[in-house]
Length: 383
Length: 199
Image (cartoon, rainbow over all chains, first blue to last red; front, top):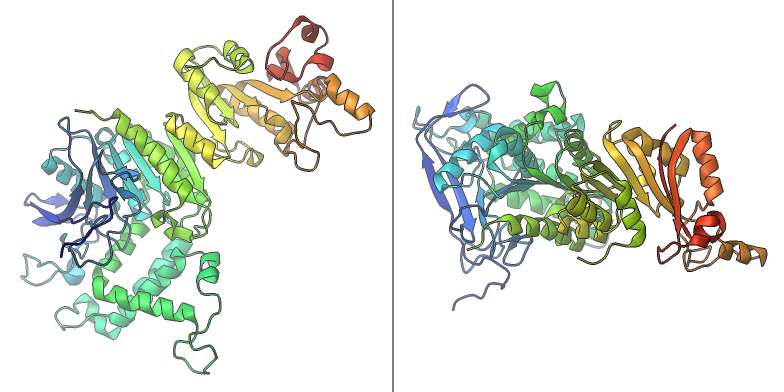
């Protein structure tokens, strides 16, 4: 029996891998070679090759943005809400590319890959990668795919920061940047949350200084705690109250330390299921990339100077209940763009879901997103 | 393209082609889109309503979702040739502060507002009622218009703030003007239009 996927889904998709032999210089001073980037594409590249959109993923997601990997696949890609026929990232009109970042654990070269120097997994020896490194790697992927200029680079959260970095590092290689639920850099509070997550992983006795693969184990407890902490910052107080309140799983207090409140059950489930699908070393790397992200740093802490040469047009979107990267943080980006007289629009979406709102089907969000991408599509060549 | 509303046509006539404009409370972007297409004007619109934001984005305008009561602190001094605000002054919390802000970020200000000195308003007040007129159709308890004024009131405020009025005209609610309105603007004008700069 063949499964019917929803009409507005890209349906069955297969990841592809691009291999690179040429050394990639990294911000940390090291170089990486050879390396692979795993990616998915949806839709068709037009003859003028000007309808390509690059999606940048967030901390713990990957190249699988939309569709299903098999008939039996239960869950679609992470941005199924926004990517597909007739959706804001309309695969009938755009050729959509999404790659797993370097240092990832879903097929792109990362800590789980074999270090050619040792013949063993990189583990903790995998270099600390930055958002700029990712952009540099993606530019090579664009070269390999024959895409000189993206119609748009689009991303949410860490992915939004990556879109912003693209506009700074390769100003002539994108016409639009859509920066969603992002920030121009992390606050001390943001870094603090990341540090607690890292400490949880590194304090796990099964971490073995990052060489847990060789011990045939994973720092299960640490990674689960890191994920639980992350999840709290993705949701809003209101969203948690609405979802769980103080509801008890057994209906009464049991005067013990087992799961009692529904929210505990939810967080434990999130933590445990994450351990099955994500690598702890990658988690450490991704949080570091977030912490290091600060494009204004090389420009006297002046973001508008960092963006001075950006040629893209910008759409910046934030969500009212997002306290991880609040609307005020998006406005910092908008302000820097206004200071430089850049083309920019900004929408602040009323949402109760917190940071996670950028993954949710919120009507005003989808409307304004579609309005903007509709403009991008109208500028692309039509055969 | 459909004919531009007469009050917006007057404003468009006041704006030098090729200039930079900030439109406060730009609505669905009609004025900005017209200025861009016919006067080569660039700039931004500020708007609070989500549906209007979407409409502006669809039109390819630069629109920033903003609450005007938060001021214009995102903009540097003298960033614009004109700061325009149509029929919004009466709905903001601090009209005086916003006027000052307009002339901080812009060289000239252009403003329109419903004239509370219009004879219909005066007549209803004489009869002991808050005015409900075609230009001000809401009841006192559900109106967004919390800072209504007359032409004279506005000009007094300009004096106090050291604002120099360059031009003033009035129109009726269909945005047309006539001789009587021009002779007795504060009595016969339903909507006032002002162009001003720092004194």
